Image: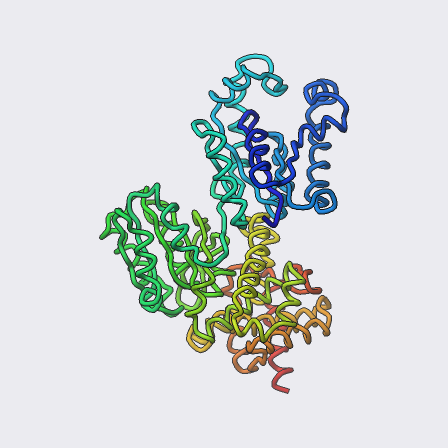
Length: 534
């Protein structure tokens, strides 16, 4: 276990009982946050509530939790199990931080069970006075969305403590990455040999499934996935033509045809096995079939693992407008089995490294340093190093997406290098450049434009170009192709009227968005092309 375990959930859900048993089972330190707070305030929580109110209590609670998460290494020899009070993670910024720094498991409980347990033990200030079950129902409705934002949610009404301990321990051991999206929250697992171990349980609640893949991937991995998915249930297969050129309405219609032929209903599951094209298309098909059915992502390329499969942005291309028709539709789960990368082509693997470099630039300086200093190990696909790159990249994206689910603010920073990269990719007809190659060139262009705008140090541009080149990614912009791509900037999804949000880099781990008039960005891009030609 690499991070502390936080047991969250409503009062009387069994957090302390499960926590103590789990700590004994693993030899881990156990902390009851309410008990810690009572030692500090030197009175009971109930008495403190009556005298000072809930707001004063929540302030102390937040301070103590942040102290534990930020300094557990100095207090304990290994990550602790921490049982939280029922309202400890109600504030979203605290919750998102906790999801980044710990593994959070929510224990869910019904109002009726709460009433029974409280009647036996008492001492719950927020439930005092009136009908306990009704008050519990009201509070649970208010808090429900926050409880769903976790690495796992376990039902406790009919479960014994021993079973809950084992389920929680399994989550803690896998060290998943959480994407917080209220009731649509989900976990991303990164590891080796995940498909056979995890797929059967994921499909247990679904009557039928549709496997969406492409012809190349199906030949490599289709039989293994079908064996894990089937197990007595009806499973259809939709094989798409591989490549971005087929990520369009015709390809989407092919998935709909397969869903119709196999009678997929609201309880069915779409399984996306493939790279970014398959993930985007299968996710969008799931978002639109029966007004939305569940889907899981099984990415098979580095690019899809670190980018396309995480975040819930699903789409197809429309004519020369990349990803212009789509929907936000979060997957039920993402399994990144890095063993699958052994079959990826050298060009495809290298292409995915552009998004890894971008992730480091956005939010993980150590990840960027690894890309800069360990290119030989990375290109050799050393398993432990590749797994670390995937995990780190996903953590950056998952945290940004959790903060801004629908790209209304900070999530736009994930588009660093994409504005001009998408234009170059589209202008080349989606065939001459891979997505990652276009992003690599887009990063170079964004850095150079950032220099002209006064945001990006020249030394940073030099360092990033060197890193990309070490990873065998393209870094030389063709002025003629850049001029040709300028005309497509007006079709960028991030355009709002005559302005466009453009992402600039100020340093490693420090990026920002600036609103540029479209005419200004077109002028800067054209000037960049002219300077390259000169």
